[in-house]
Length: 118
Picture 1 (cartoon, helix red, strand yellow):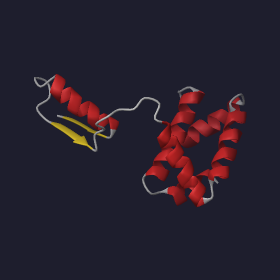
Picture 2: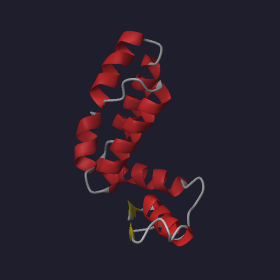
Picture 3: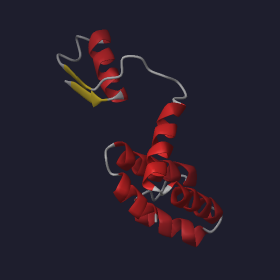
Picture 4: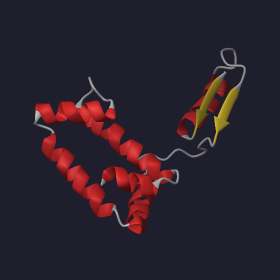
């Protein structure tokens, strides 16, 4: 059985189609039917939502502050401890943080994401 939601949902359906001898069942929850490369509209929707919540500037300040810390090994270690990204590259850790905040906004947690960023 293969399972996924959104893009992984599309992948689970494709996997079942391509390898029926390996997967008897596919559960594609909200599977994407037309994958889009460089989907900038997602970023815009997050920005637009945070604008409505009045915290876009907070996210920009957080991003700038994080960028300024990347050469401070002590500070980077503390940030990694907070986000649980120890052992990865700084860029990868920042992607995890950005994805988590964007996910909060996307799934109805804009207020919480704004509080976390603040």
